[in-house]
Image (tube, rainbow, N blue to C red):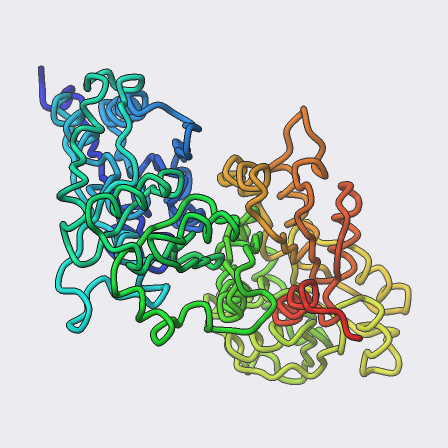
Length: 531
């Protein structure tokens, strides 16, 4: 067999995704995520991380909740190995750290047995991060000099892997030792077993007044904390309705929470703890996401559109060569500005090419893009990003005979140019980019919506609505049924109309048709009513 014909075996990367907050994944983990051919991900890996996967990468959900497994562990092992043997690089994205109750050791063993190379990328474990976000240090010189991490339940997994005899798994937990193993005890996956944990610790000598805290969805925007003692915590959790996933912390360090809690106090915005779906193009999503995170919301980026410059730039170059024949250049979208500027540079032209020409920009963000990319301040920015405002506020009292160049998307609406022509203007529509469908996130979107784990969906254009519908729709369910009770917020009336055409109920349209205006509209949804 020649070297050329030797099949290449891919590498499996066991990557710790961190405890939830997408900012807590390691740099190495993010680098690998952006290059791998396949991403096999868990329930507790933050969904926004998938937007950083390489374009075209296959994404496979294998999440596990209590008694509900999308895929059995032996099947996950086989999936990793099969993809690697086909020569594909595999990112196995696991919540927390792969080797802290993440079954990373088992998966690595299976890879080694199959001759598949693997690498371990450690992650921030929820055992430390969740308490930290709750203001509970797992060690403190005045309260605890040691900590132990313990599984909340040891189930016989013979039903899954067939490698352990009944009772063997549970037998590994020695409660006499566990009760005094360390000053701070941290139980993962322990909500359902909390009554047993509390009683066993007390039976084996841990004081019933020992402080306890449970941190649900630690480091996520919807984090909740319930505190008590070993004697009260079971009832405290029951009354609070706290459910998995949660980290249980037992020890004197819990008393430090009132002084050290910080995460829940970051903002008083009504968006605090809300999960918002951002459907903008990947290149644009960060602005809205950052605004939402600053208000305490969890921004889940699932781009359903992709902005792509046109491959054939002949028409653009011809228009730029004849700029002097126009009275106005009208930009209605931020997307067109950098592409227009790039072609200008390719032709060795700069801001001087606009001598004697006025520029109009629809919306402050577009006006800012004109200033940044072209070095020119827009002569006209209407107060609203709608055709009526553009025409009603147009600075030239007489449009007849005015020549207007209109760089825009290939599939743009004809309403504005037609209305300008009706007033006598000569409008040359110039497509400079196209909006492409991005379908890679559809299955994950649908899963989150079906589980009721999204509070609101934001739409910033008619194309985001259309592509969202295309991405999540399935034959057996209408789009409205898939979305369920999730709130819908649109950036403007045109976008809202597109959503209604698909049978969606639009809860609110932003008063200011901008990204900051959209964020403000979201706050309005959950603001208490004025009396």
